[in-house]
Picture 1 (cartoon, rainbow, N blue to C red):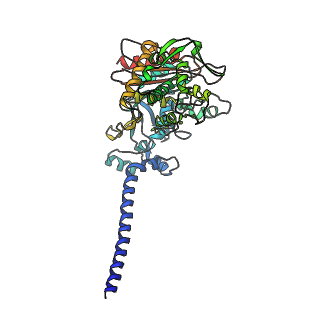
Picture 2: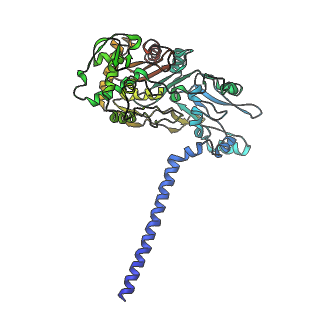
Picture 3: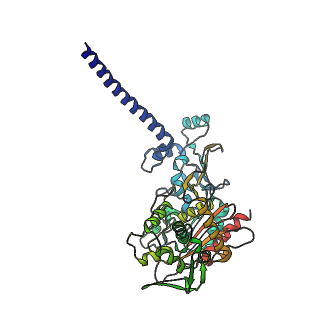
Length: 476
């Protein structure tokens, strides 16, 4: 009898165990189903390989893309015969960031595809349209983009090849994004063959702001400076260097820009004057494992919290790196490559006390009658550096403007902190010109990063472009 009772109890435990397993699996399925609906569903639906998008377009007229103040950046016009045409009122001004929807989709046209092909017109109108066989009007996407800043940035960049990124550091809003040379999305069909021709070396379709990889030059001295501070927390302020225009290590020689001799430099002067010799000497002192770990934490060799297409920045310094690699890397040369958007993100983290806010382009989605359907809020990516480090770098960058290479953005109207850069990339060619900075120093509102290809000194070319953008913002 006891044996039968024991067997019955064992059998009941087994059945109960199996029941728990199935209940657990069911609960996991419910959790995943909820996660999919809330988080993943729009990504899957928005995938270009998803055939459901075609059915959306059969029932809905694609919505508009609007600037932050409601100006139309992209719209669909419907002819009397029912044919549709996507048009871009600002022609090439927003070409890369807004993108296009013919020949595939890029930029916001791709990122916001799901919202643009959704419709929240009222139920009565929707039903009437379906009965009549008419399409419903798609929702509109209101972006963070500022038309005034975009125009000023584009005009200031002029005919140069390059990119400009303007961000709000406290939120991550992208206020302007310019890439040149560009293209006119209104004539994309006619121009397509020439744009993708193997003989075309201009790369107009490339968004240089997010996909262009460049040696960061002296803007990388922000990273070198941070590495030096972390490796010498108690003595970094004691650093000095005597600059005679070049720095010799064995057979290797690093020269300051145009061979300028800076004389005796403390660490603040070396940063302000962008002294290559001083920072090259810091490179010889790199603790390589720690520097690589730090670079990765600053989003080199890493995925960026960015929704549109981008390239990864790269930091390469092997464990057995020799003197030449160390010297070059410390001044932003060597194999280090960086995108303008990444440079702007690092600058934003400094301006925001060390915390990087995720960059974003869509403020909210609204129905055709202006009712908000979905609102996007700022979100923190994480802490890239502590507040004391951010404050130190801010002060050093302020010195660049008040007493160094960034004098072109010096003004009594507002206080700018920044870093210039002149990046060599090919022997015999002019350097790329960089500037990245923010203002005002005490309460940062705006970050501006400028990259101008083959144009020379960052202080003489990129910084004046940034100045025009700062002037536009603070003139308001």
